[in-house]
Image 1: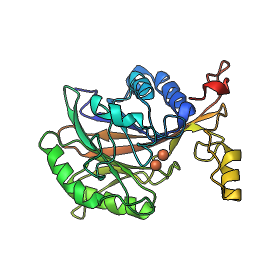
Image 2: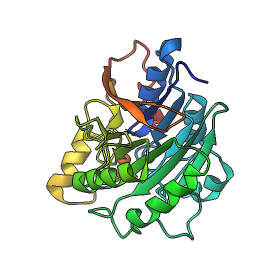
Image 3: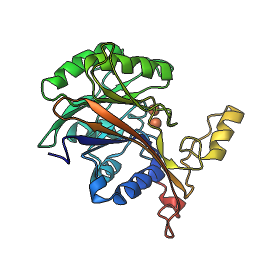
Amino acid sequence: MPSGDFIHVLFFGDLVGKPGRKAVERYLQNLLPQEKPDVIIANGENATHGFGLIERHYRELTEMGIHVITGGNHTWDRKEIVDYIDTVDNLLRPDNVPATLPGTGCRVFDFGSFKIGVINLIGQVFMGNYNSPWERLEMLVNQVKKETPVIFLDFHAEATAEKIALAHHCTSLGVSAMVGTHTHVQTADERVLLNAMGQNQMGFITDAGFNGAYNSVIGMDIDSSMLRLKSMLPARLEVALTHTLQVNAVQFKINPETGQCSTVQRISKRLEPLLCNPLDNPDKAE
Ligand SMILES: [Fe+2]
Ligand SMILES: [Fe+2]
């Protein structure tokens, strides 16, 4: 059993390119032994140069200690994911997509002294023609509850109202923790939500933010982002390679017996450049 009677679940918002992978790696390397979370989850939809996740980078993330990687609308940007997503254990994609797509959006992970179910859904407002996340959620939660009361949801969505409304629905179902992802901007509304009966404590934040280049437009190069918006031409977006990095994460304290969350801690850090910076060579941006 983890320290005390609780488990600590650490979630990193979207990792954007190499700066995102390096920011998370540095953050995890610098944690003291007593600070190590029991479960580490990260959204990896932008981890390969801002778009998608190739298998080599999936391995890189799991080797640095991330236990579960979730996805979003950019999950399919690198075609090779279609070939490997069903061959690996720790990678999810949104569940509410056509069933013909490979991969899964819900899985229970066994940590020995406890289990955690992780669900990944995608929103419909300003996102595209995805299936209803509302219709899938109750079925998935009930499926996970057969194995564990500890349930974590990454809801990848644009609209804050859609995320907050779904969060209230989650409290009625007994979800332990829910994070929003996709906007790459961390919101300051972390809290423990209760259902209408004042029960089912669920940790929540509307958006966990992103990990990557600090001086950027949500992780992408400022000049190419401005050019694209000013010219309205489909200019190629590049990952920003500034040497100051940012870490955006959220940590939840959860009772593994009841699935109730008692504490939510928002993490937003700026990492100053190292003397020998791995981003120095732009040819190795990936
Ligand atoms: Fe993203
Ligand atoms: Fe996204």
